[in-house]
Image (tube, rainbow, N blue to C red; front, side):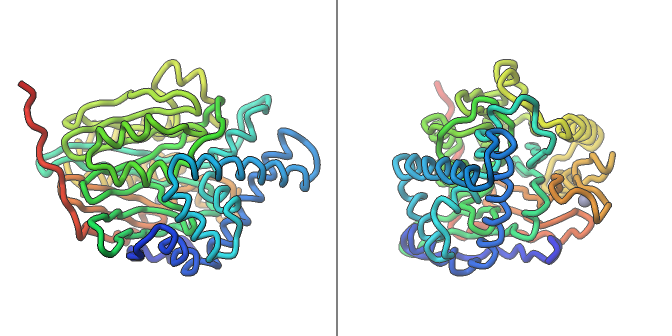
Length: 383
Ligand SMILES: [Zn+2]
């Protein structure tokens, strides 16, 4: 199945409890979860062998032990997310450690490659994220660039438990809690992967995203992020229409590098903060700097102020193959290369989200609205 065949119509999960929701998720995508788990375990085992040596059995044991340690942290810090992940594991016939590898692949990779002498050659995933503010309010969007093998597993889910007021629209992968999205209070989160050198044990990042999306406002989402131990680097872009925070994180540090709901903000996959820059090891083949230059140029030329304008920039092939919609045209190119597997854009003041899978040349976006949208009221002016 090619990525362009992926149906992005959001799948509805209205089960009452996280565990029931996880069971439904695991049952629905049992096959896909099994396939993606195998792909990601193989990639992690390869990384473990490359750095620590040993045979495949020893490397496999190392990956499993690392995943197991992450289960304990998740249960302690975010028990609801642990319940949901366990439900997914049970219904898909996998271990919860397998599901940790599926969710936490890029971060586990940073832990495993920690001792390597040189930067990783391959870029495990990127993303170009842009926040703009126009007459209709802010729009936060991004491309989702990742290991090309993940392309067929991109999905949208609507988490809407019965007898509650909760609702989340999440861009995700089969078996994954969330990659990015919007919650019923308009809190929107976009992500850029960062390659940190201080990776350690932490909460799996898709669970962090889910926890932030459910927050009543962006400031609370930021506080939730700061309260959790993380494994490795990501840049989190958080907006609710009235506040905006861009937070660069490594395994150990968290730094607010972007502020201001009325400004424009861009980010790719390298750190802006000088302290964090000393704790990252950007992959040799990265397109991060080229994409940031291109996004900055396109922003200056086009001055996007709404969803349509932002969507156009996120789909740009200018500078191809190192453009914003990033991929090689060569069918036989390295399947490990990073490519754009999807695009999303959220409108926090309207409770809306747009998503599309694959390359922008096959643009078939789906527009979604939160059914329980309860956008927060404007902040009161401090006297
Ligand atoms: Zn493309």
